[in-house]
Image (cartoon, rainbow, N blue to C red):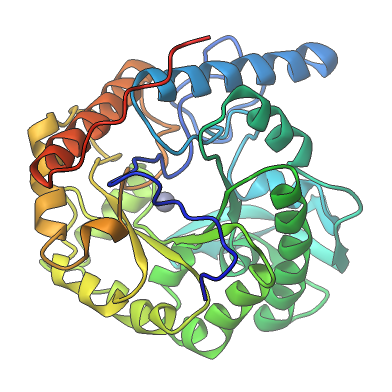
Length: 359
Ligand SMILES: [Zn+2]
């Protein structure tokens, strides 16, 4: 399946963020999800670009190999994408249960959904201009999108997911044309709705990724370190085996890389065995704790994973996004990730590639 595709694995154990970084306090209220912007109109555009520049700079200074935008130009990883689509009424709200976990007031699908214009393509082009390193862009997955909406039009989760998959595919192809090397779909809902994952979830995800030359990633996690998620995790028992349902399906799918969380989570590492042949983006940084891992903590997690995945298929990463964390903590965690990967890379006999000089 990899014919004609660029490879993420240009370096042994290339490091990457899963998604978000905290935003600067002059742009949005820190340590808050859905935080409103503090700037307006032209100043907001410029402010977002400045924040994105800083995010790139900090990743490069920390030795991160695959650069992302840190989600500096979006308020939320799902909502911001949906806000740009037609067919969804953000004024008409209904209360629904999100990921079977917490109630939220959500917008309503009132008509056929469509993407009138590109959502993130200008931002991705801007990111492309900031670095020559491989860049990754995250989009929400179809199942996670439908789970944040009340559907009064299709009245079928599967049909709505399929429509979103087609829209995501349009956006992904334009991101690829703008120079994005790796497209990631965030599907935390895959850890909750197992029957739907089997019936249509993976098929919808493959539809979203159809025809891409860029590498594709699906990120499945236990969420940000917010209370609703930590309360839910407390009910999951001593071993978290949720991945056991989706991994065999994803192993047979067209998606190149599977992103999972492993640091301080109760996920048994041997579940990686279910992904044979795929690249594994492994969360070696806990985003639900403000304690900064030591490089040795990260290295220990990576070594454990290497019992189940070949070194040339392992991408050290964070468990999830870091938007709700204090900025200093997030940066410390980036440095720990990169230093931990360097320890294991050296043990494997891989040479350190010197960091790019700052321009
Ligand atoms: Zn996540």
